[in-house]
Structures are given as C-alpha cells and as structure tokens.
Image 1: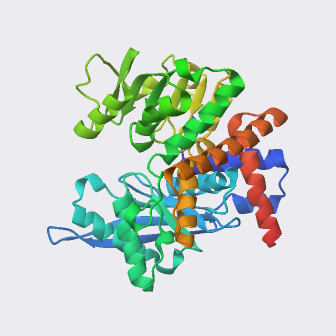
Image 2: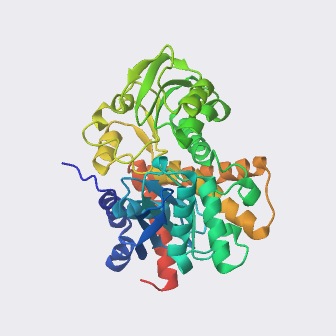
Length: 416
C-alpha cells in the first residue's frame, strides 16, 4: 500500500531530487529534517469558565535563504508530521519562486467551527505567547492557513506587539488592510495558480477559453480559481465543484459567481438547481481539461491516478498527489503543476506584504498583480525548462530548481 504519511512523502520527493542533483550525503541528510521544531500545550479559558488544553506546533524547516515563513493551521486532525511536511514544502516553495525566505509551518489541534469568537481570540493570543522569542520579522513570520483568517492574524500581531512593546506589522502576514495587510492577498493563491496554468497552456496548445474544468475543494483558493478563470484564462466552463460534504456536476456548466455566492450564503453546495450530485472521488475522475485539487493531502493516489482524465492538474492544495500517482500521471501524459509551484502565489504576496510593512509604503492592487504575474511566470519558465532538459516529471523538475537553491545557500553559509 502506498505511503500516505505527508512527511514521509515529502522526504521521498526530496530523495529523488537529491539523487538527481548528486547532493553529497551531509547536505541530503540535513535537508531531510527540520532545523527546529517545537510542541506546546496551550491552556485556554473557555466561555463556560472551564479551561481546555490545546496542542500546538511550530516547525522551522530551513532558514538558509531567509527567515522562516509559513501559515498556521487550526484543524481537529492536525499532526506534527503534517506540519513538518508543509514546512518542507514551504521551503521549496519560497525557493522555486526565488524569494528570500525559508520554510516554516504551524498548527493547533482544534475545531474552530465549534469555538466562539472570544475563544478563538484567546487561543490565537496563547499561541503567540507560547512561541515567544522564536518568531519575529527576521526569524519566523506566520500567516493564515486552514481555518485561520485575517482577524486571527490581527490578534496574533497585536499580542506580539504587546510582548515586545514595539510596532512590528511584518511579524504576521495575511493581516486586514487597516493593520498593514497587502492589496491582492485574498485571491493570491488562486491567481498565482491561474498564471501558471496560463503559461502551461501556451506550451501544450490548450485553448483555456474553451476548456472545461473542475474544482475539488471550494474554500478560498477553489472559489477564487472559479471566479478568476474568465479574467486570467479568457473563459472556460466550470462543470463541477465540491466541498467536504460532496459536490455538484453539470456538463453544461455553472455560473461561477452564483455558485460562490451560494456557498458563502448557505455554507454548502446543496440546493443548487440543475445539478447532479458528485462525490469528491468522482469529481477527480471527470472528463475535463483542467482539474484543480484545492482540498487536502493525498487525494490522487496509485488507486485513482490511472483514472484521471484531465490533461492539466493544477495543485492549489498542498500535497494532493502521492509519488506513485506522479509516476502514473506522467506516464499517461498528464501535466501536473505541482503544489509548491502552483500555489506559491499566497506566500509570494505575503512576501510583498512584508516588504511593504518594512518600507511603510504600500502598493496599488495593479502593482501587486503585475509583480505576482512576473514572479509566477518566471518560476514556471525555470521549472518547465528544467523539465524539458532533464526529461523528468514536473514535480521533480520543480524540486531540482528549489533544492539546488537551498543547498547552495547552506553550502555558502558553511553549514554542510
């Protein structure tokens, strides 16, 4: 049976790149493990007067190229191995788009949907107090991720500033605009992914204006992927979407704006007229031109990879495809746009936010979009050039680009 532990998968992916690059044993082993990780217990006073203990994590995977950067996930099934894997992928993500940051990630085992706003605020502040001196503008800068949002980031930034008694807006990104957030951060992950799809389509001769597409996972990234299709890709037909409760399908297509409005209003995809039900598993196997896995890890495995019909798979989620599935998809001439390239738009605009915070000068939305487009286009070109030259599948090509950059930084520092 295929390995589904996300950190083991991340290590296997690195091993393949290390072998191809001919990395020396010390560098390879150094890059296989986090440089630093911390676990902590967070006592939080609940609204009923009781105290609940939450388990939290923070992993700083590699800081050779700059301070650690990575989101904070609040999820009832969070594990340290998931956080380790995401921190590793963030290391390769910042490197592949060539921004001067390292990789980190954080998490708390909780279900924020069952917590009041006051309880969420107390948990956010407890998390920052627990990390203490480990975070900072030049050390480690968190951001939102699964089930966290700009308001939670605002509380975290405020708690940090209360501790250090100074203004440090850049310590947290993904903040609300009035507190130093950046224009364009909300749709950055999806927008960056669609820029990559646009460039990939040029290479393979796909007319995106006529392409059919399906979105698995209809959170922030999935919703914006649907909404931005017309703007960036000139059209296309949205035929299926799904969330954690299931999905809907219509071969004649949906109005993306109406579907998103329904999801935001109702909280689910039920009651959509003129739609057939489709499961998350079935959606992945639909006969579409472009597939957007935008949910969780390990959605495409050796069990279903051979059934994937989409010619282009743009991974807006982290780790949706296992190594075994990568090989099957490559053999079947499917173009996978790997997660740490395709969804790097989020961290890229987070970097832009840090830059703006540091200079105390803020860019227009048009400036942010142009800079993001340039970064994503350049990153895709480097990965595609490597793919063509080395005759490997796209994920390995992206690893070759990013791992070589991180390894070079480690060597220049004299670490290995």
